[in-house]
Length: 232
Image (cartoon, rainbow, N blue to C red; front, side):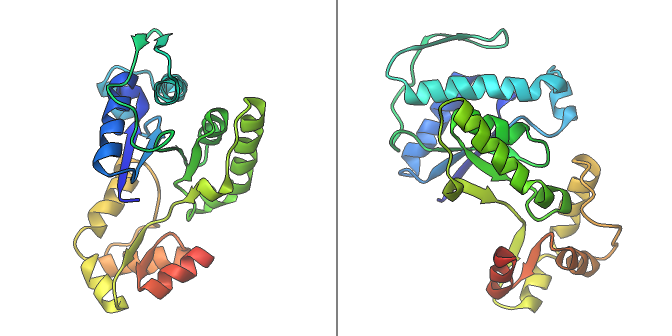
């Protein structure tokens, strides 16, 4: 799948976002995947006047409306206080049938699996190569199946994505050279802005590479290294 749309749902009106994703679905001839999440940064919510405590609830409300727009042949009416739909329809039906794949992001909290199961969506486990994220994978899938059964939906392990960072090159030396530009800024963002302690405190880029490889967090190396990580 070449196109991936990722959105923090509470920041968009469901009808506009659904229409944009349908357009991407047509432009990519069905190769778009719609990934959704509540938004990880309270600072983003603050700038837009959104209560961070309500982000997951708002994601659930907006995803329910978007799926109704994608799946229903009838006009959709909703009033959730922060958005309203009045006999709303999409400009055009999706290119994919019945619609592009929808996946809900999850890190450690069970909120993502609950929403994915409730709406019969795929699960996107973003922290699969971190210690905390890996430890909850089994519980997350159990929650997803439980909520799917409760709401009359079905979920498939075939559509469960486990996400981990990779930078692949023909040789290890080339991969190390290529991450000299970008890796320090990437680590700095996740540690200072997203508040995710990815590494202890390495100072040099190659120390970062060694630390990420040793912990199993990321692959920076060859296709064989990537294959070993997937098997692990």
